[in-house]
Length: 498
Image (spheres, rainbow, N blue to C red):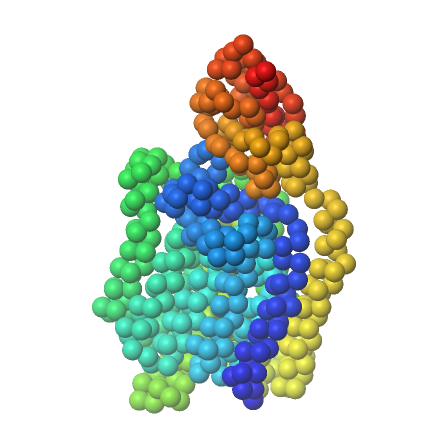
């Protein structure tokens, strides 16, 4: 048995080996700019209610991740990839620490540590946790809520703690991405309570208070937002986000058919142990046995009781929602990532059980504790080593092929350090994060002030830029045309006022 200090040390070392190497060495990619650019605007304008990308409000996602990035920039006094991605890696670490502290009594010392390692070394968390993406934050908040609720429910803690505190994290998760995580959370809660014959206990006053707290956390931002931007506009954006996923806008059958395999890929390499769940399972109990076990559990809460039903409940409460979500036409594999936490709990419990055997169709042999420990250690070490090798051997080659920073450098080459760069309705342009000239956003060319010397426009605004009259007799001239890696074009104009 390992001590609490040893568990903490192991978790910190594995986290550092996986999530810190070369964290800020590569330029932002994918959707990272949508998390970073609104944070920069918030710091510059002081408006933390309405996130903006370019000159327009960005309402498709709530702003919690933007707030965290802005906070990181302010705390460390630097705006770079490292400080932008730190919130993600700290969120991942927070869940691992919750596993080894809150879940310690429910899973045991070793089981909680193994669950934390599975969480840290799962491909899904490694992919998203090293980027400033919503999934790292959103999935982590869900994980904290899940671990706290299940641990405290098993330990028979106060209903006020069990049914209120986790909903704080669910409310923050709503501020991270929206309410979709509630589908996964309540699937687990209902399955666990139903399997232990305590489903009626879901109707209680603390639970109602927890729901009020959760909704209030989201409403504290949503209500001021609606007042500023207009109820109709916000409702239209959110409705389109939701209906677009269900209706399958931009549906691609090939991608959709791979949703389930790609979702399962997030659980690698630990998914190889899933067959042990079948090998560990026992024949279904009779109705009389279930009732007897439940009565014993109620009278002797310290002896396990309902906990014996948790693994099976977790398994089906994870598998069925995963399939449902992945079969939605507009769904993406990452939508099932909240299930990484129940998966870590389930395997942590299984791999540290007293007796574990492979199912009959895999030979039915007993998987000894010593061999399980070696397998866990081997997979963890290999994962850590792979990330370190990637940081040392592969990242330098990727740095040589960076595209976003190159565009920013070209812009800075034509815009003097002493000048401002005006961006006319730029939409989402990740390279603006790397432009070290003061940037001013405007919606239209006619909104450019007479003292503007350099401005950036998209193709739709080029004709307006070429015929703008606010600098007469001078006329703007195009000094740079750029096409980025997405095929998007922008042009930089200069106004010669001499």
